[in-house]
Image 1 (cartoon, rainbow, N blue to C red):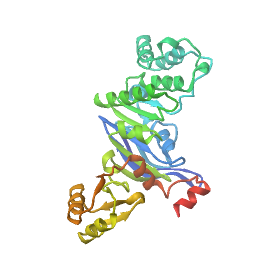
Image 2 (image 1 turned 30 degrees about the vertical axis):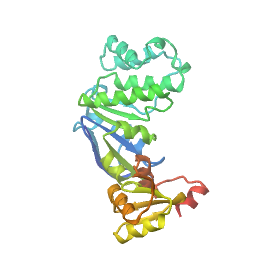
Image 3 (image 1 turned 45 degrees about the vertical axis):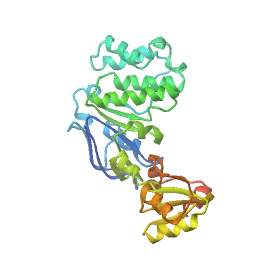
Image 4 (image 1 turned 90 degrees about the vertical axis):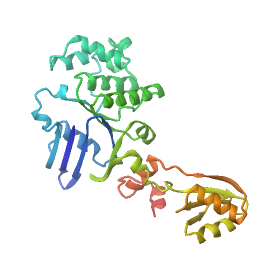
Length: 308
């Protein structure tokens, strides 16, 4: 389990992380989200002892990382898959890591096979593609068979088969009762593999909730879309019933405060011919963009204009 409590990390006057509190629990894949510069990487680095907090705490199973007797066996970490000597083979890289914790060669072979790197185990890491490098980073995180895993952008550079493999892997790890903290900018992928999400912006907590609860906050969640050949009579009928109605292009209406059945019944009452009727589905991406719209550090001119 990872417990972050009132965590603050300052660099001079700038607060990279500002009073952040959340918990990543066993048996759960926790998605860790935020715009560039939000403080995600800094938080992960504090969790695994690469940064000292200015104040607050970050603990794994109740201990600071520095106090863990065998860190690799407690926490599997992948923060930067490129942090491998390019002249070292995948096998030798993992073997060197294993020897720091008394992990045997058999386990090295296991993780090479588990990550699909066995055929290239004796190739130098410097010749690896981005996707192969990611697999090697994940292999390093799995090496200690840890109960907690911290993975920063593990699907970056992977092909669709690789993305599917990571999705299945993290779900299997959570099903075994492990804690998985996973950062990614791929919202669709996180929506498929995460149980809950922690969203931060400018170093502060914006949301900490199950995925579906966050998705329910998106602007489209709870909207019924209906399209008719003559939307005006239906709009009047729905407004009279207390619903909120927003006209859309092509004769469509977006309706809040009414169910699909309510809209269909209203259409029958006013004699409107329904051409399309259904509930809109919100997405994690939409909810994330709403949550972070005021926490984005870098905007183009078009982005700034659209945010007004």
